[in-house]
Image 1 (cartoon, rainbow, N blue to C red):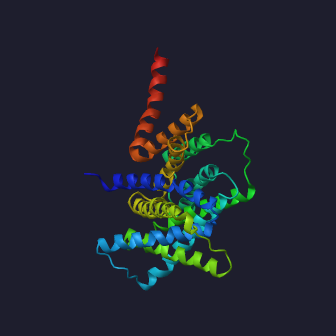
Image 2: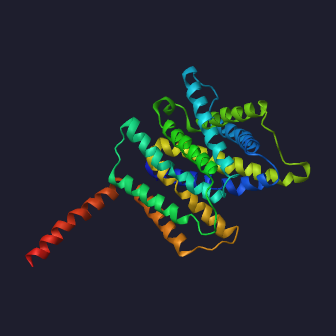
Image 3: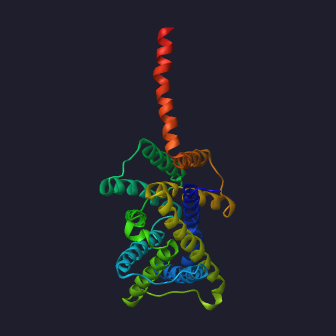
Length: 314
């Protein structure tokens, strides 16, 4: 039977992989004239009934205590900002580049935890972050002449920071007593209200035309995979293994993008891509290894003096 920690790593990997399908379902909706706010509003509103059904199937109630409402409103706001800035960045740069840049958030999570919550940055954690980000950098295809948009880059950085804050916030004691499913449900509810507020203040509301009924499949998929499944697994993983390991395992999202590129769009893997994928996989393996990896590294370090002494005595 799987341990609670192992389940946390699996959930974090599922969350990252499912979140990586955002461009796959969002970009076709952009092509038919929908704006980011409308895409996200339908994404949230379609996911909410899914989560409500899960809550009822598990016999959970929808009640909240008074002191729980404000933190959940804040979490909904933070997630809405993260989603909106990321989706808006797709209008300023290639979605693959945006998804790659998004993954500075593990560094932001580690720094926030170290600065504000006194979490010690171990050598293993730092090494995993560096390896994962190096792998992501290699996956970035900059040889096609694309230039980074300053506006797009700033939007992605805002999305990354707000997502890092969400990951840290989901691990705070004030939310630990709320079931994971209920947290995710209310994050989406309050997030949808924020998008509705934007429509009320003048943002255009767009949706697929009657002749484009088939595009609703993209809306449902967007609600199911990178929303309901990803948000739920992220929160569950954080509560099992903590914010920093969950954030680092999020580096699997670019891997998902590569896989979809090969299987769906017929792209090929270059040697550079293979090196990047290898670095990410090794980093993820080290995260899963946890303290045991640190022990192995320490044993390796202790071997060197012995080897040197052996050479000297020769």
